[in-house]
Length: 257
View 1 (cartoon, rainbow, N blue to C red):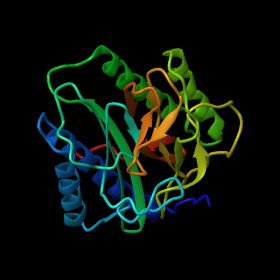
View 2 (cartoon, rainbow, N blue to C red; view 1 turned 120 degrees about the vertical axis):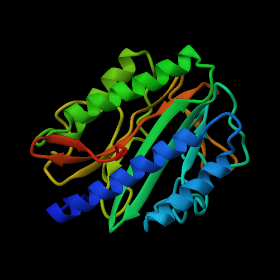
View 3 (cartoon, rainbow, N blue to C red; view 1 turned 60 degrees about the vertical axis):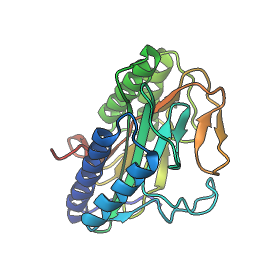
């Protein structure tokens, strides 16, 4: 299903997007050396409930996961890149942490992710990974204009990632979003320009470049959810929900403050 949102729905999407951005920024600021991933999940739950919103994750039970996710935020550390299920782990100096959050408020969902390094140790490899995903996301946003096609976005992302020397996995990528978290169209992180669904105002897309240092292969943790790099290399993931408008893509999931 591909949804095209009405003007009132887009106004609600702005509210939901800002909430997602604010929660992620708050969780990043609380993610210090010694912070436990389960505390991040608990704090996220409290902020969602305080805002009168609903988690898109806690009851989520797709074909690629094992059972309901059961948590409120994805917490992926170092070689974990997607769907990181919070567990009893204490963040260490130099860890590369990715937080991924989707929330539903007033009938509209928004989805975003941030990667960052905790502590004083900043491995150059990790810094490069994060910067590359951020540049790829900027390229995706620039390509998301009315009349363009999904393949134009995919090509923009893939160009940045491959020119930086990283392999690209296209199994998981961006997606449509609206009254539910995951919708068509799928937005692979590499592709051919001029192909796929034509963008039109009112479409919401979650754009999410993610990358691993030396592989495009994933393995699933024993928890049935967390996806890690097959080689154990580090990973990064950056995501925004955007609205296609007559003037281009409007980023909805920036923090409000």
